[in-house]
Image 1 (cartoon, rainbow, N blue to C red):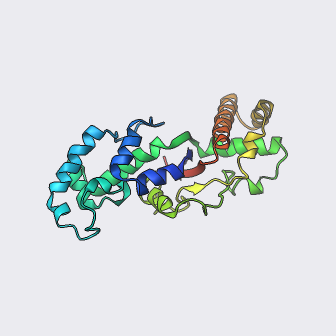
Image 2: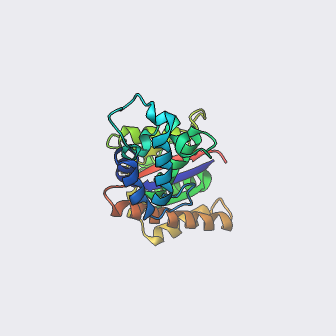
Image 3: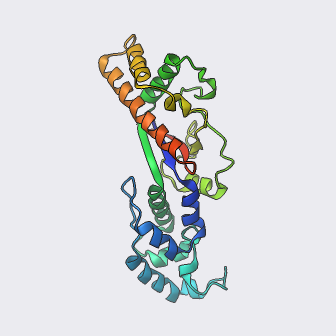
Length: 247
């Protein structure tokens, strides 16, 4: 089982995916660098002929929804119908696949920091760090010693739904694998207020029941998680998301 923790600017993601016209979205996205390799690039020079083809297509000319919109360039990315997507991207395997890759590419542009590691190492590192710092882990870790789930109330609901439906790291049919959940704010001080000496002590504590290689990985895990926590702390507009998946 693998765990991923993302620090994402979901508010800007919502604005670009759900609110801004597609031309505006591409203009902004074209100049942004993605933290992870993305399946799509956002070049205006590539978008304009696709929009022109859509505007001349039967799908657009016979539209029934929003007939007052005369230019497809005014439609947000998230509102493109299956027919519109296939007209714009005839090379796509399907409209669903294209929507998914587009969303993932936009998501990656607003991904601020990323952590990916096995559940075994992550849970052990967090549990040992809590022990070293003499903290009650019940409010900061869940029953599996992973980051506790926080309240998603301030996250735009449509973006949460997009993550659930379009992010291929989430399998809705898999028991015990919830949709991307917001990490509880109480979790982050476990790492934010820890010193390097605490990480070393946690790794030494692991030596009682594990080999040297396991302890070395644990120390690196804590270092990576600490960097993630400080990235989250520096920006009030980002949110931490947690995913789990089989590997």
